[in-house]
Length: 139
Image 1: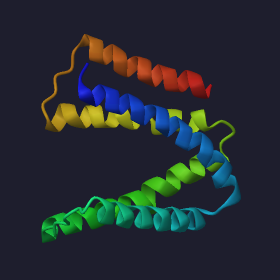
Image 2 (image 1 turned 45 degrees about the vertical axis):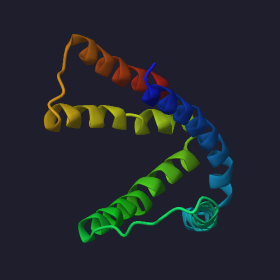
Image 3 (image 1 turned 90 degrees about the vertical axis):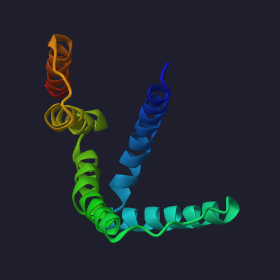
Image 4 (image 1 turned 90 degrees about the horizontal axis):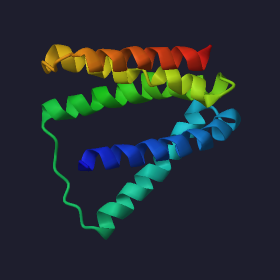
């Protein structure tokens, strides 16, 4: 089995745990409170990691710097608030994640267009089943 499959499976399991823990947290705190505390913990943890493992930091190029800033803007101003509030206001976190999970289809179609990935019958059936599965979960 390829290494990326195992890593993706581990990530999927821990995303479920994170989402279950998040539902309770999201009901108690605002998005700004959540992001503030989460970033403080991540910052302190990152500093500790850098010190303990003597990580050498590399200064990003100006192009990469702006890509990082754009990514942070997209994540913290658009994506995370949408995920936060969709999970906060839905009865079942699985409903929100069924729609959020459709990002798999979007990245698949982008790969077809820009990376020249081939579409065949099996992949087409997979796309159809993904859409149908999300629909049935929400019905």
